[in-house]
Image 1 (cartoon, rainbow, N blue to C red):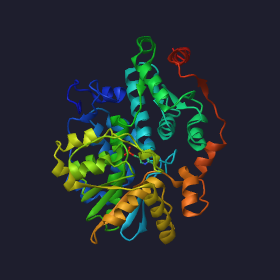
Image 2: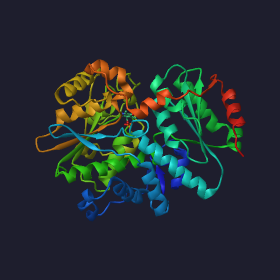
Image 3: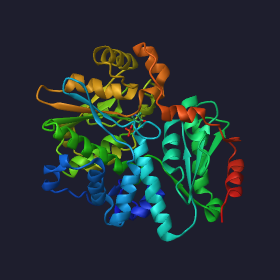
Image 4: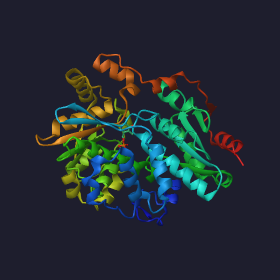
Length: 436
Ligand SMILES: *Cc1c(COP(=O)(O)O)cnc(C)c1O
């Protein structure tokens, strides 16, 4: 399969190139040249298949031309070592729980898949160690570090701003050791990001070591998110509740919902989609007006969705040829202030005892408000509420339990290297770590 850039000014790339580069040379996002529809027989019997079987079929359609079938299925099964169940919450509303992975958020699926796919390509080419550089303000670092943990021939450097990441988040990438190095930068997130950008542009570094990024626009992180939407459909069909299915995705950079839209384009029978936003309402306004006006991001309690210029918007536009009418006939929007998110979390807990996190709360509320009588709704619970324990406890007036695997991280010993925001210090650090 070839991959083209949404800006259409970069050469076509192979899957391997698209995964290593992340972003195309014209700064566009890679799109697969074809989206292969899955046969009717697959959907007719999908409820009889397991999550892993379903995911293997979807993975074959995306990556089957580029990765041998047995290797691909191994990557899929190794990625999905945890379930993504649909759990009933309220009248006609189910939660697609995406927080059962190692860092308790949906980004685990894409990060784990990308790590294993990259390892497959490295082994095949025998080109030695690959170094993944990732700058994080919190959640991305933990998903990427844990996704790559213990994967041979790959070393991950997580750069994060000293003192600006919560203790829980920090523990998820500083206690791992092995092939993960946490670098604490005396600066802010933007300093971390510029260190990474400078490293990619530094000729000497690139001569000595193979560098790659693992950010969320990477096709190997974004496409595998389609797996759990097919599975959600299957599990709802099992219960006879898959007609008139509405999928609602709490969205920031819009990678998660775009993967669901790819599923739809492959024939997944979802009636319509809702993109639920916090106060960052850029996509919501686009749906209303047809005009895309990026803004500076606003800080909210659903902070993983604080995005003022969603990167995957370009993919949605590309997928539907920029046709606003087509887009609004399939996708609707919602936007909620912090107060509305709080009210939703408290109300849902009070009536159903289900604990929402601030991101999932946007999705749940959009279904409560927008679901019609004959529809069934599934919203993504994108992170475990315990990741935001202080916020959640204060809102619902409870003391929610911290899952064991989160507590385990917090017990670990912090290992990190402290550096200034000066590029040369970072470069020297990388150069001394080279493995020959
Ligand atoms: C990243 C993230 C989101 C937003 O997902 P996008 O793919 O960027 O739209 C929502 N919720 C949580 C908990 C996240 O970590």
